[in-house]
Image 1 (cartoon, rainbow, N blue to C red):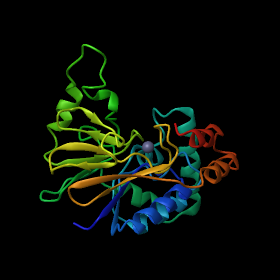
Image 2: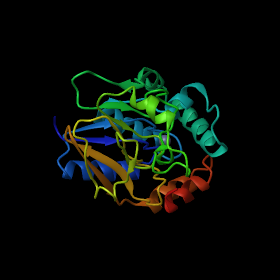
Image 3: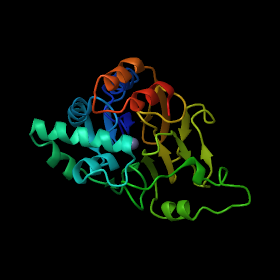
Image 4: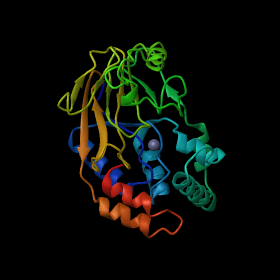
Length: 255
Ligand code: ZN
């Protein structure tokens, strides 16, 4: 398959998205897939949506797309504020954005293709988080069984790409965690079942404020981190009265 850039959790951060697209093209990526959460949190949701629609061969629906459509149920106040503002922007613009978001698939699972795609997990595609803390080597001491991961692995027969937690890394078939640092940014799936989290383009939460995404050649995953103008992205949030300043602050700090 052509070298593919897999991006997720852009969250209205066009500064980060532009930097990732440039980096991926320079690395030879010939196509882009998106695992959802194009909007929410950031100051340029419409610009991100327009670019993703034009750029990506496949776009999966995330929980922030669901929230824009149905209301931010269960969201914290920061996330809710961004969703209400994003929905107002979409309503004001008119057009077919809402129909487009509604029609997005929650999964991409085609026999014969090298990977399966979800936003969150196979069991609850837009909602469930597969955390590093669910893996056997990160569970509390004396716990040695992860029924959540057992159930999720039963649903896949190939590598599966996910986002949603905003923390990149791999849940291997033995249910242990491999961070990008531990595998020196390259992970050989050997075409076996595993969950590859590509991290977040627009709001990384692992303490590294650089944008995160992955390249995939059909077997090998390369994790990428990309510097971009974080101050500019934060400043756009500070300049948007409807968005809480904390959403800009967290970009600067990477959480
Ligand atoms: Zn997200």
